[in-house]
Amino acid sequence: MEERIDDYFKKQLPELERKKFEEDLKSSPELAESVAFYLVTHDAAKQNAREKELIKRHAEWQKLGPAESKTINRQLIYYTSAAVILIALGLGWFFLKSGTQDRELLANAYVEKNFSTLSVQMDGDADSLQQAVGAYNMGEFSTAENQVEAILKRDPENAEAQKLAGIVSLKLKNYDKAITYFHQLGEQENLFSNPGKFYEAIAHIQRGLPLDKKLADSLLEEVIDSNLDGKEEAEKWVK
Image (cartoon, rainbow, N blue to C red; front, side, top):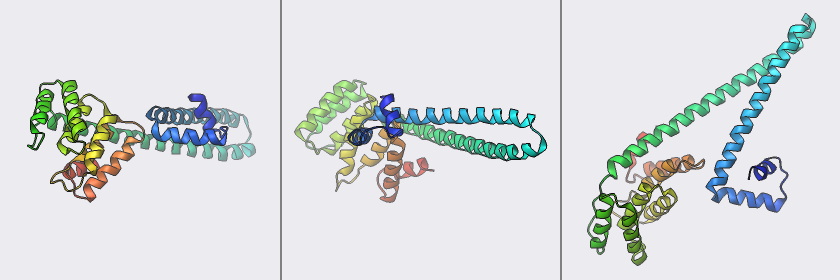
């Protein structure tokens, strides 16, 4: 995989392979993570090379006379300025990462507070849902998952079942399934209450893949702009 990524960024992949790589990047979290790691490590290697060059040129400058040192000094200023920019970018990355971690803590706290025990609203499938909720509340998440998925096979548009299935998937750390269920819930219209998009943002935050921050940001903004369930929390999280 690393060789394939390296060939892509060096523009050494044939056209068909390049397009295939870009398609895979959209659908493969593993590839996205590897690309992010590749970019970070290569940026660090470049920075290390610049630092070595700066040290080398400084040593050469100390051996030169006044006339020659002026030219080298200008180059030193350039490299020093570049180093300052890199440091600034590094600090920016640090604060961005810190912000991401803070939001993850908020999401985890929300899940702990609101998803520890659940209730179910009555509808045509209330008995089956209540059984699934009962299993969930007893910590039997796999049982709850099987029960709620059986409900969704009979009634794929059951909003309460979609919500419960997403929450169970969060507890099982199956974030891909949680995102799918919450997305389906968020797409439903004419519901009195629909936290689907807010819950989907939580699932992206907890999954924590390279593209998840952007996806979570977009969902939180949509929750705020459209005055959806979770708006109050979303406004705190985007600050």
